[in-house]
Image (cartoon, rainbow over all chains, first blue to last red; front, side, top):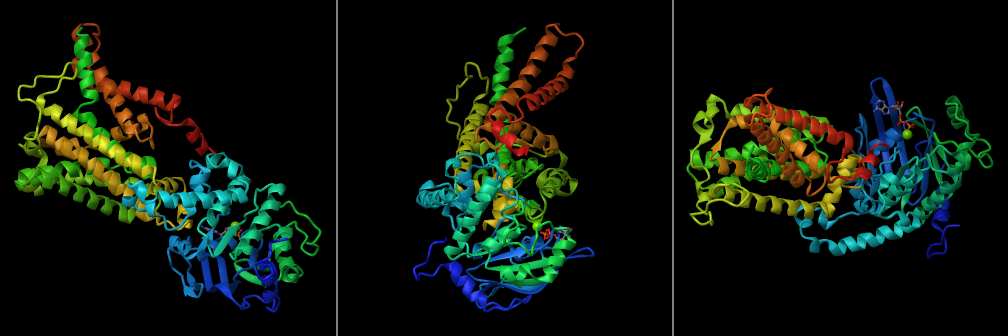
Length: 299
Length: 329
Ligand SMILES: Nc1ncnc2c1ncn2[C@@H]1O[C@H](COP(=O)(O)OP(=O)(O)O)[C@@H](O)[C@H]1O
Ligand SMILES: [Mg+2]
């Protein structure tokens, strides 16, 4: 069980309680949204990859974004984080309109993402990967960089934080190794740990479990829960229904670019439209019995 | 055959003025390509900018050489901005295409008749370009020559200051690449999106690397103008850039001492084969070659040597093969 907060109620329970009163309808408003998107449209030629009318992401909760392959989940991530440009649409982060902002600015505002295809910087060491994640570094300015005394003490603090995170993610023995020498699962862990270096308000994880072996998956689940316990909002894309069921407070379902359902995990997985969408895409997980069925779906 | 002469000439060229110019250009490329991953194929334009700044300020406008150095830095910065701003937001290959075209455009523009009054046209600028520098020569007036390295008094002073410049820029690069700035730049080389997703403005870092590398190359151009007391437009051909890349890859890209090691070896081999073949033909050892063939043959040999290097040691002399292997995922 996750640690309890000072009030004696874990964030998991808080999130569940807050979302309990929210009706399970697509585009439903949330009590305290960190991210609100409106009319987000992205087409590739004739293909409508994303067409989201309205969606809100609840602060402090773990929200899962699911849907068959090609549903537009990654594209939606890319749009929201500024890595791709919308045809139309607007969205706010913490109440602030952020459409059209450069991706590095959105990251600085506290919206940090990982990638479906892991982007560990292979020819850099694990610790250097981690250090890159830290914000507001004096030594990143070209003139200050020449004078190590200006940034050495900050670097020490960054290293301490990095070591704490690496220990938590069980990577502390790899500190000096090149990231390229890690296994696929370890790279996923490293990417997640690196994203947490900046202490983001919202982390968006694109398929954090893909290619991760079952043993590591369990610890990854624990890590995602612990991120929530620290007050960080999590939005993640995942295929594995058991995993989604296990850790998410809220589930949003996309199909063909649109949000077709949302609600608490139990409710969503009984939704006929959702089952249709998955069966239509020949998805092999058994949605109706998601409590018991264990899928080893890596796609 | 005069082995002493072959050795003296070879050593002199391996660490001489030309080697210094190329090493400075290669240090600039190391910042741009080695660390930041920017494919600048127009490094010669930055060298030319440095040379022309000296030529124009000192000769055309009759102003101070020290002012010319400031102008060279400013011009190199402007050139980097012109090349970088439109291209660095795009895919990596755009910079490569634009820089190679721009360097030829630069050469053809400066040699054109339209600007003959200021830039000297195809003849370039010739005269006492480096006089102010040579006046500072602290070497005794009756200086003859060093034991092995046969420089004139004037050249030796250029060589000394040239190596001080190389040392200074190498130190600067060493400091930078060990800093958080260097970390961001190397991260961009590995995967720009990853670095951007961590809140770094990759565009600005790439621009900074392009400017810094351009300024270092411009110092190569300044040394050139001062040493030769002449600026010739047609010396700034694209092959200059490719030799600078050869030097960088020979020594090992993204290695602080790569350009120095690569530059010395490059010129040692190039000069050595040239001198050796020249002497061997003169001595009648080789009768199927003319002395005029030597210039070309040494490049053939150099090319073969490079192919061998790429086959047996693709990471360069200083490079780390383990790192290279990580790329082949
Ligand atoms: N850069 C692109 N160019 C053309 N089509 C794209 C591009 N990116 C995504 N698509 C298409 O958009 C749709 C949504 O893709 P994606 O967002 O990757 O889906 P998901 O992450 O849900 O599996 C797919 O049909 C995909 O082929
Ligand atoms: Mg995807």
